[in-house]
Amino acid sequence: MGYLVLTRREGEKITLRVQPGTNAEDLLAQLLLDGITIDVLETSGTRARIGIEAPQDLQILRAELVET
Image (tube, rainbow, N blue to C red; front, top):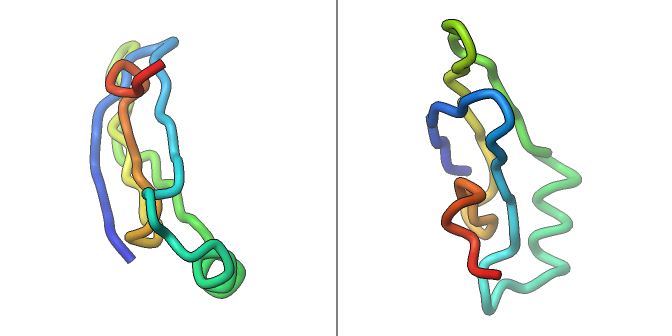
């Protein structure tokens, strides 16, 4: 499991997607066992610090970094 902390402003997004080459069955088994945890660590005005704990095989990206 990995843990990432980032700050998002109102209206900004976070994308979770499967890393290329990941075995889907293994990832599903890990998700069923551990799940994904999202913590709101702090809020200030229109900003929130968010902590995300997820399997290493999931990419956690700020939406502006997602290739379309």
